[in-house]
Image (cartoon, rainbow over all chains, first blue to last red; front, side, top):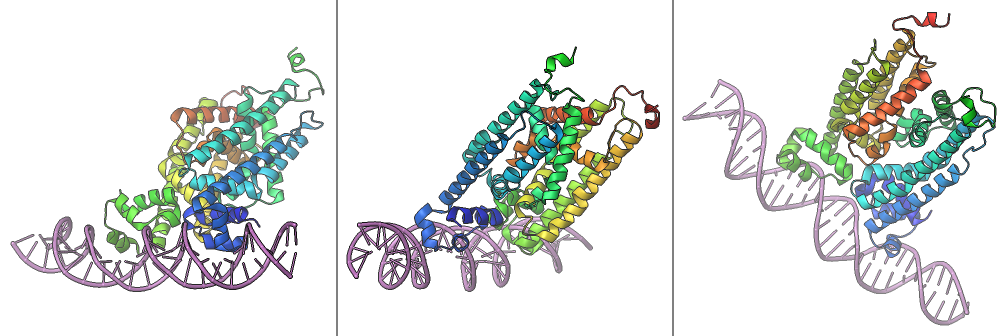
Length: 208
Length: 208
DNA sequence: GACGAATTGGACAAGGCTGTCTAAATTTGT
DNA sequence: ACAAATTTAGACAGCCTTGTCCAATTCGTC
């Protein structure tokens, strides 16, 4: 395990103030001196950890958004599968859980660092997801007012049953993820879905 | 400000390890010795803080659930008002934000303390809210499959647009709360609402 | 094998925090 | 007004952590 990875783990478990360099060095399997050689001091190491996590999480999120079902065969099951991917690869995995915890615990102390995350992470993420939903709506698969609102509500719904697990820093089981995604997508489609629409028919014709 | 209140504030801002007794004493306007006289040591003080917050939050949540609109005049606006009350009095207020942050930051270190919160807080809260939604469904105002799922999704939806603010420990403005609640309730009713139902008509008759 | 670079373990000073103690000052109850 | 209880300021020992220094060792590369 690299020093930065070990540091991420210890910072998350102990908090910034509670983490000490000896613990991090031991977790990384190197000497304390090596930690100082590589990263200067504790604060610089912390910044490196957050940057690393932010970068990897964003990459994962955009890679997953790229798998959004633009031409769904079965809208419900395709969206459920997408939601499960999103959870597994971006929200429940190591990087996602760690980054969330660090933001919650230390965000107030490092405003500029987390402002950067906020712009590059959720800001661009939600826009990208909203664009995909807008496209689905344009193709007649959904009936959406504001795509940004729909995207946020989609994420909120498919995670609705995982909140408590997230709060305590746990990892939900594959089954819990699937159930939350299934319930969330069904409600989402009850609200925004079009019933029994012939595949491929443009949205404009539906009103006729 | 009482010692426990001051301690809550400092523990939240600095984390358990980062909080020191001098800071707490100064925030409370008493001497360090008085803190030790009253609460023994740092860990006992922390436990007292969590118990105090848990108790007050639960009281607030149940008081607010008691204002659930069982006989709604206008279902949409009544649910929006309820969601706004829930946010203002339980989730965005001082106790709610503090308790959430402490659970996220220190929950892993005090399993038994937060297990207690989990049972008495979200467990009973969600059941109580689910019962109210079940009642609305029985009265024919909603069409709900699983009331527990619906209750969790209701909360997820009305908070969907406040997630980032919560993450950074901020307090959303009254306008943001209202907008998130409005968007959330509209989506909720699109999914679970019954359209143009004559007031007071039993659900069973609707199918006729 | 040899040489430079990186790593290691250990010692170290400086500083911070916890929790205790004590004597003086203040508040409270009667 | 007096006595008891509480609060206060300050000093203090013990411990932990950070960050530096250095000599010895290991590693990578030629």
